Amino acid sequence: MKCKICGKEAGVRDFCPLHSRAHENIVQAYDVWRKGLKIPWEDYLRRIRDNSLTGVCAKEVAEYLINTEEKEHVEKS
Image (tube, rainbow, N blue to C red; front, top):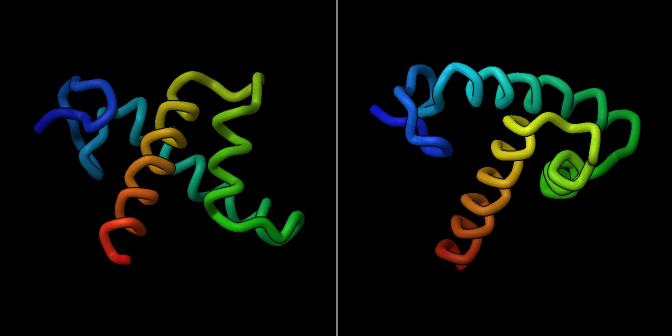
């Protein structure tokens, strides 16, 4: 199976090891952000994507999640 973001060999959650780790970090850090800033998931992802200090893999995962979740919301409507 290939990574949904970069096309390299995938492991867990349809992501390569680098994107899988970035995904884990994003999900784990959200609890802290949610409690501290009380922001929804989508806003959190946009902040990650737009932050100049965020790493490339985390930005790619955030962008992927934004795009796939927006598509899911449109398809459910």
